[in-house]
Length: 210
Image (cartoon, rainbow, N blue to C red; front, side, top):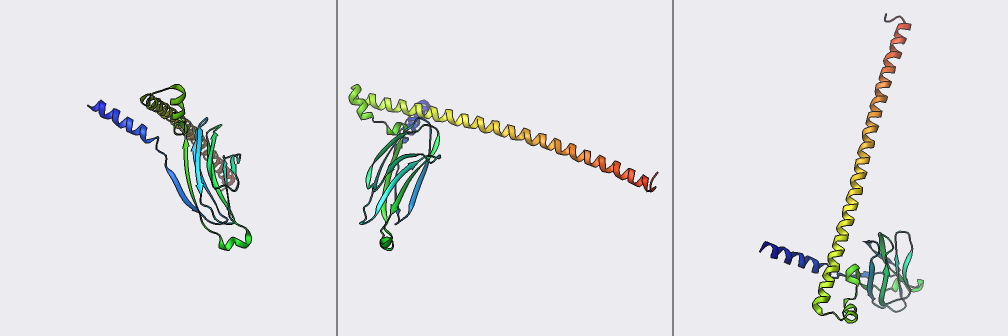
């Protein structure tokens, strides 16, 4: 029984990873709002957005990485989809920019923006895979769960690598602090010895001590 319960819990956890959380927010006139997300290397990212229209106003969509490289650029857009594949582990920004002509800036209206983003396994089209490979629904679901399991393993491997890097950094920092502390103590001891010898010679020269 415990094994069955564990399997069910793992199954539910895997399924929960496939849910997509949509975002909805308001974008003011002549304003810019950005959403950031960290994504691993070689990951397929797919987004779908919809922006409410406002007369005389334009809205742009720009997706960039931490190096300011533009991955997606849509000018005067209201709805659509975008797809890109990450080249490296990075932080990506999805920005919506509103443009209102200067004379109409005081009469600008709020845009209502909705955004849905998927990446990794979530962005794959398993319906197309079922049609091309002639897989049954259960086989497609098993394939999806297999991909989810692989993604989880990769995430854990990445977390372990980051943990090892942080541990190495901490150990290196501790070693440097230890060496610096020993060096500081030696300097202080040397300075104290020099002061004692200097004062001793000074007092002897003044014949204050023998």
